[in-house]
Image (tube, rainbow, N blue to C red; front, top):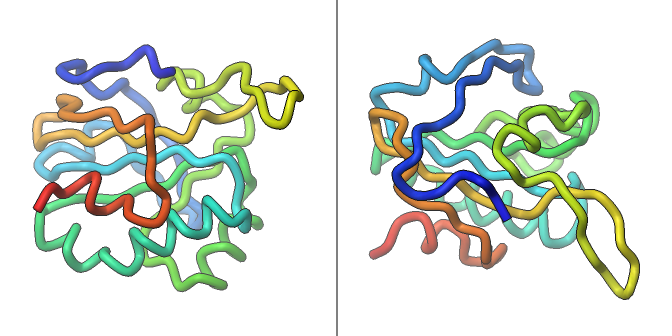
Length: 151
């Protein structure tokens, strides 16, 4: 569960996406943002989530959203994932888990009786002033865009 909540300001960070583009928190001002953390490239749930966002990307752009996916995978993995599924938005490698820890989504998880450290699938939505308007921690991977944009 994230330590960030609705009304908090997006934490300050600087990073590089899978295409080598550098950006930081201040560059996100002026648009709404969807920053989604996911566990692993090429897995069924993560692929469903990314493809749902891809299939609704035009709608997100029309509603003035930037979209960024973040996972602990490296640049090579993100590049393959984006190419295989024709993802039009940046994927951010977080191999050192700095962003996951900053956003409070890295921690102990349980799966099939096994405990391990990992990403809690979580999406942060901000307004144009970088205030968090929503934290989605119960992500429906196949209908995620409808959780972001309430019709």
